[in-house]
Image (tube, rainbow, N blue to C red):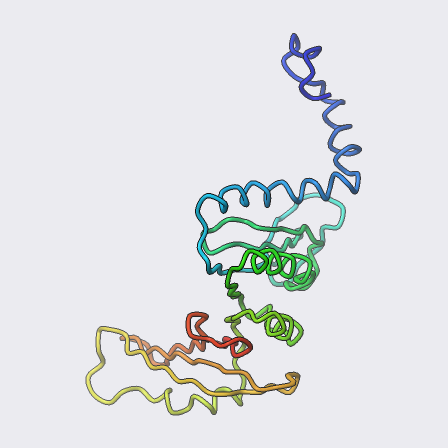
Length: 236
């Protein structure tokens, strides 16, 4: 319909035909599923040529602002805009492995399992080691448990709280003497169990002191390079 030889003399399909293609044909459920697979199949061809035995998956949400009354758009307080709030899954190389368009007012982690779990299964079926990393929006017990059940190492940032602050109190004292122009970096590692967790998990804390700053910068990270399955969260 779009590229028929019958339309070549006019240069392209009519606008009405394009609209029918977008709103009726592409909107069919089977076509939605097929469109979602196209990008993954193209990446699979590249992976077949050169792919590591260890893959790092990154998951994050993003904002697509809208300026009308588009269906399922909604106001998002975090972005302070009316938008869509899609969820995306990337490889360490920056390839988009999966995506899901969502209403603007859903939580950042909504629908994480639909994108993440099939990709983990696909990679493990190929004999690859899988590592996952994400920000604090994905610091959810059900995500930890799903990764641990599948033997996936992970690093997920978690928000600071009073209990965690007490665990790193010894790192927060500024070094004695003349401030260094180079950042002073300290690390510590400890087991921590939040009230919503069924078991303790390892947290790695990183604290930086920068010249000209009165307070330290805290970043607690469990590096996937050294993490054991089921051991990792990240906090800041």
